[in-house]
Length: 268
Image 1 (spheres, rainbow, N blue to C red):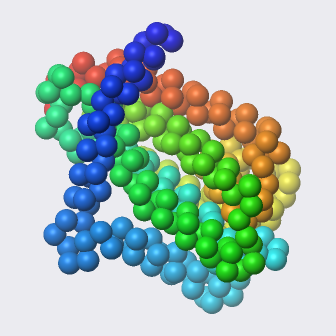
Image 2: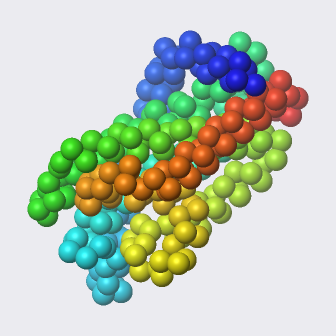
């Protein structure tokens, strides 16, 4: 099992040149043909965050941020992590079907497709990380060494998304409802993850239920890096749970993908 996993990952590494080229092409093609082009990559998330901010601060007259933290800072700190998660969960499930024309090309490593999407969407994500740090600084929350651990949380998020992406994209070939189901989970996840509300508002004895959602670890981790300046090592149980869950997803994703890959062309 370990040997098969090593071979699987080694094959992907050998295709790294193709990975970068496909990621670049995917990024360019997203808004090809529109007048604003790549501007939409940054404009759409900014507009979405702006609408949420107006709704929850002016419409509901409430902000869900931590005490002493401006709601705009709190919101964008968690939202940038969630937007990356949601985009890649949805896109990852449908990525192989989207490239169905490649299914019969035996020499093409379809396993790189979920990685291609992760790479192309990382470009605007990194931009928004810097925006979040800048907005926090404008509000008196300056970067510290803790801010660097956002690299750790980003890596942790990539590992989780890879495992889920391999699992859902391979099964979606045979059960098209998988991508729809993922979309429903993402919708529910948006409201069940503390993006615009504070986890501390939930009674402490029930917080563990919310924390079963691995997205909570990432969203809270981004805030801990940018706003709260809390190290991930200060949350040993949450960290252990997250990496156990992620390891299971990676193993499941690799195993299922390798077993189903020979049959992709049969249902194409």
